[in-house]
Length: 279
Image 1 (spheres, rainbow, N blue to C red):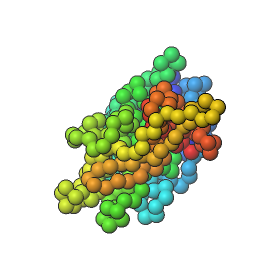
Image 2 (image 1 turned 30 degrees about the horizontal axis):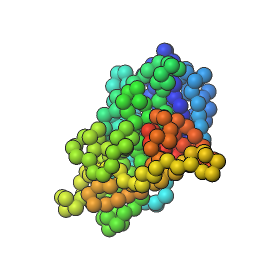
Image 3 (image 1 turned 180 degrees about the horizontal axis):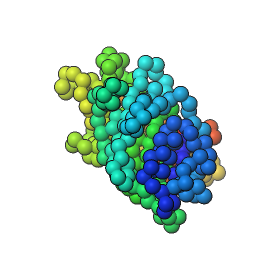
Image 4 (image 1 turned 45 degrees about the vertical axis):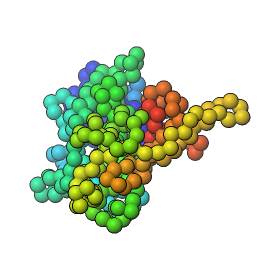
C-alpha cells in the first residue's frame, strides 16, 4: 500500500504521529481514516495493506516488529523517534527486549521528516509505502528517502544465520553503484545493522552499496518506451542479498517521483531511476 500523505496547516505533532502509526498498522484504507491534520483532499491511498506483518510492540515508544515477507523465522524491529516538531530518526534492530524497551543490535539514521503544509505547486507531501517487503518514507522536501527493506538470503546469511534479513536503504543515493565509503547512511547508501562480516570475523554492522543491471532505454515496435524492472541487490562485506520490492529502471525513464502500474497491474513508485513495489 502507498499513502500519499499530505498535511494541512493545523496538523499537530500528535496528528502526525497518529497518522504514521495508523498507516503502518493498516488502520488507513481510505483518506477518511487519516486525522484532522491531514489534507484529505490531496492525500491518496493506492493498493491494499498486507496484514499480519507489522505489530506495535510498545505503547509508549513508536517501536514495531516486522515479520519477513517470505522467509520464516526472521522478525526484526524498528523504532521511529520524534522531537517536538518532526520525525527525527529511524532505527532498525535484529531483536528487542520488551521489559526495558531496548533495541538489540541496532543502527539508526537521521531523517528529520517535517510537517510541511501541502503545497500543490511543489508537491511537498510524504509518500509512505507499507508492504510486506518494505516500509519506506519518501519525503524529498525534508531530504529523506529512506526504506526499511527485506533482504533475501545469501551464502553468508545461510551459513551465519543470526545475520539480519532487513536493512536501512537511502534511496536518494541509488544512482551510484558498488560499495560506499564512510560511516553514515548518507555516505554509504545502505546499512545492515547486524550481519556476519568477513572483515571483522564476527557479527557487525555492515555498510553496503547497490548492484544490478543498468539497462539502457529501449522502445518496442510501436515506438513506446519499454520499462525494464531489474532487481536490485545490496552488496557489502562480500555478500550479495536481493532487496525485495526494489528494482532498477532504465536511466531517465521517469522524471523524479512518479506512480505507475506495471504489466501485472501492480502499483509502483519511482524514486529517480529506481522503482519500489507498492502492492
